[in-house]
Every structure is written in C-alpha cells, then in structure tokens.
Image 1 (cartoon, rainbow, N blue to C red):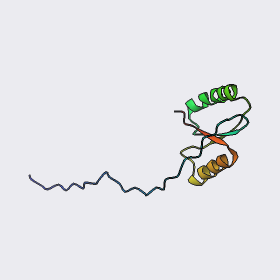
Image 2 (image 1 turned 45 degrees about the horizontal axis):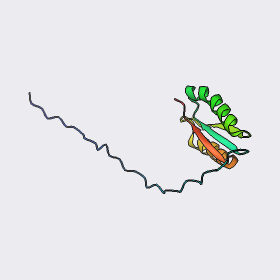
Image 3 (image 1 turned 90 degrees about the horizontal axis):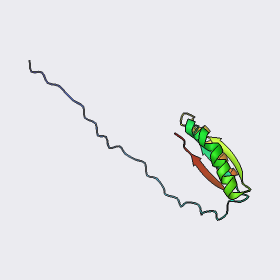
Image 4 (image 1 turned 60 degrees about the horizontal axis):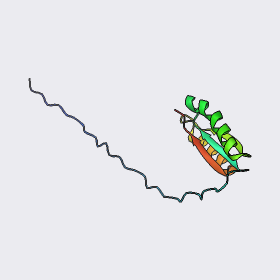
Length: 100
C-alpha cells in the first residue's frame, strides 16, 4: 500500500517588531539618601535573597530608602505596566530582582 502523506512545514523564523532604542539613564554617582526601587518577580529564591540584598546595600551605602514592587509574569499587562511606572516615578535607581 503506497499512499501519499502530506506534511505541512512551518518556518521557525518569525517576524519581529521594530524596536526603538533608547539611551540608558546616566549612572548615579552616590546612592546615599536615594530612593531605590526593587522590581521583584516573586520567585522563591528571590524571596530568600531580598532581605540580604537590602541589608548589604544599607551597610555599604548607609542612608537609603527601599520600596519593592512585585511584577509577576502571570499578571495582566496593565497591572505590570502600572507597577513599573509607579516604581519609575518613585525611584532614583531601580534594581531588578529575578530570583529563580
């Protein structure tokens, strides 16, 4: 029995969106007295690391104010965007904490 089989072959190469590049913000020379935002993806290892990160930075910098925003992959885009915008408005500098 010799039947014909049809295979559909798809290209793994997708089309990408054109992305506008932006310059990075200038580096802050001194973090003392600054407000540091932490964007955290709520992963278990990040939960363990977060208090150590804050403690180490307070020891090395001194007076510094931290605030943490949780931004998880499963949240709606509008919620993620709102939290990131809040973090940017609040912060002089931002740390992204991806603990997996």
